[in-house]
Each structure stands twice: as structure tokens, then as C-alpha cells.
Amino acid sequence: MYKIVLEEIEADKSWRNLELKKIEIICQKLDNKELNELILKSTIPMIYAHWEGFVVSSLRKVNRYLNSLEYKYSDFNINLLTNAYEENIKNLENSLGYDKRVKHLNIIFENLTNSVTFSTKIDVKSNLRFKVLQDICLKFNLNIDSFKSYQRDLENLLKIRNSIAHGESSYVFTEYRDIEKFATLLSDLMNILHIEIDEFFKDEKYKR
Image (cartoon, rainbow, N blue to C red; front, side, top):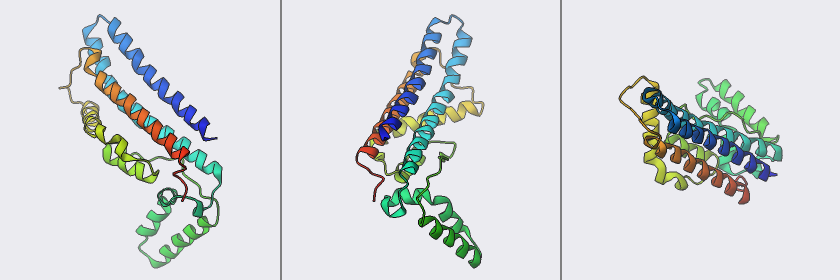
């Protein structure tokens, strides 16, 4: 049942939030200013990693559930169906020779006669900014509007994370409350995705 998937997503969300809580406790106890600043600065890329990891992990679980249904192509919503055959469509589109196009189109037709299979690979482009999230929501027939109020904050998190990862030294955080808004952002985004996946299952948004 899909409720098991939702429970697994809830457990995944909980341990990620717990990791950030542990960092908050550590920083409150530390007397070493330099070490504190180092931990806080390192926490920004970690928060982003948790965001990307949660999205990938959650959608993999969704795809495994969809695979367990063993539905035919005619059962699925067109967004989900396109998602399932995206690689085949890309191969067809990028084929320069006519014989290659025939080959890849034939592969698609052959796949359509079997149960639809969703890949466990979730492409987040290594920078899970709002535009990438928008594409993911389209592929999985999720409501992007639920995330729109967080667009600016998500882009800001990604900007700071990339700067730190590339060696930028201008960002200095002296206490946990300096980064708390990013921890809250992560929690809010994970909650929204969890709710969207819940509605996805309840409303059977994967069906045609």
C-alpha cells in the first residue's frame, strides 16, 4: 500500500530534521568561536544536501510503488508516462540517421506493450533550484504552486551553498540562529513535498 511509502518518507524527513537539531545543540555548547563558525558554515551545504537527498529518496520510493502496480501505458497520466519514457524520447529526438529513429521508435512501441517501468534514477541536475523543482513537479503531476512562496529562499540557499562550495569566504555565521532560517526552509520544503506526494496517492494523480 502507498501508506507504507508515506511512512518511509516521514521517517526520512524526521532523521534529517534530527541531524540539524543535533548541530544546533552542539553549537550552543561549543565555546570555541572558530570551530563554531566552521561548523555553521559547513551546515549550509549540508542543508542543501538534505534537500536534494530528500527529493531524490522520496521520488524513488514513489517510482518503486508505481512499478509495483504493473500498469499499462493506457492507465497512466500523460505526464507520468512521458517521465517513464523520457530517455527513449531523448534518444529518438537526438537520432540523426533515419534508421536510428526507426530503431528508437520501435523500442518505444515495444515498451508500450509491456507494463510501464519507472526509473529509480531521479535527475535533479546537481542544483535543485526552483526551475528544476518545477520540472520535477510536472513530471510527477505534483502542484508546483505549493512551493512558490519559497522560491526566493530556495534560490538564496543555493546561491550561498554554491559560493561556499566554490571557496567563497565572505559568508560568516557566528551562531545557530544565523542559519536557522535555512533549517526551517528545509523542514518546510520537505513537509510540502510529503503533503504533495500524499495527495498524489490519495487522488490517484498518476492515473490517466
